[in-house]
Image 1 (cartoon, rainbow, N blue to C red):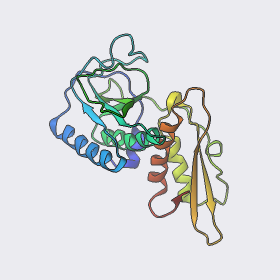
Image 2: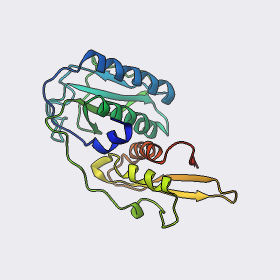
Image 3: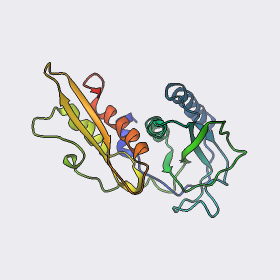
Image 4: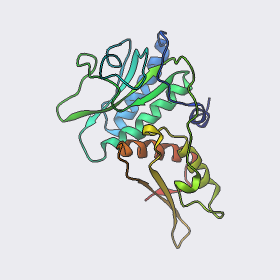
Length: 227
């Protein structure tokens, strides 16, 4: 499965079966976690065979059978949430390629202090449920390309592909509060401005990070720079 195929195949899954993740799969995930922590200055942790976080009064949202999850931790900063989205989605897509299912969780969990560590100055931004789903999930309704970008009849194909991939990105309650604007300077160089839109639900910084990763994958390397 290519990463673009993973984007198209990935759907949020909240119910999981009891099935242990093979060691080689865990090692592949951990290698990517190490890379994301290094590049994103994060403290992401993989927790396996732990059932408390997604059970009890705080674990609402129809989660069931979650035994494995990613804890998205980082030092408090203005751009932390966006970095968590950008690098966390890299792990989500790798998990899909490895045959696993996932679901971003902003509130539907409770803290389990002995399962992971949060150092001084850090915070938990969210968690990502991980494992073998009862199903592969279902596609969600998406906005049009025109609703989330300044796309037009003369827009380059790479920008259109970037927007298409961004529209497949998971967002909180499927709100898709992001916008991509193609900017071409006098020398014909392309830049893209990515912005989040207001939402009463919040989580738009995380959502923007996820959408920007999807856009980059769809648009391909070398076609643009972020403004």
